[in-house]
Length: 249
Image 1 (cartoon, rainbow, N blue to C red):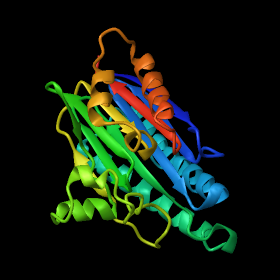
Image 2 (cartoon, one colour):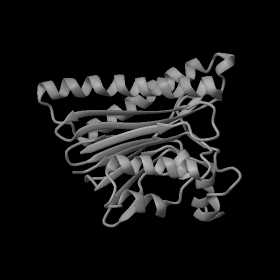
Image 3 (cartoon, rainbow, N blue to C red):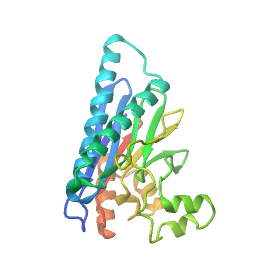
């Protein structure tokens, strides 16, 4: 597995509130996560940074201990580690938010533990995980958002959701409530590619363009990441843009 990550402030935001985490442990084991902070410049940066450190601290230490003892990381282990990290991050951010100057701070998270034969992912918010396999780009995670709810109940179409005035209203994230129940996904296999991204990418670019870029045989994998960020900025760059691309080699 080859993994590339990059974050860009975009054209219109004064600061970058996104953060991303990549940890590779060998033998196909890796941790990837993207966080998109919210709650004003200071609050958003603090929330996404706190979440990154919580995921890193909660998961990396335990994985290193398991590797040293020769313990195999199962899908169930991965779920527990991701869930523990999300709860730890949520508690820390929620407590920070008791400061009036940081009220309303929070962050989305899309994270996954990649093992030798499975991908276990955790989501809260509208950052996304996609897979490329069998000639198609498929969204793995489901947005925790008001417009996704409207799509689910048949009130609007997916195409209408892309331009809905409330498309940035999320229904779940880390830190705004004292408890959080993130969504868990298991792929059951390692696809050709995994794409983790904040909504700065998906709000700017069509999925067809993303797929064509990711599968362009004339670009290296890091060039694909750079091309997607450049294209998002050329489309207006309305938000921070963060991408992790994991390629099954």
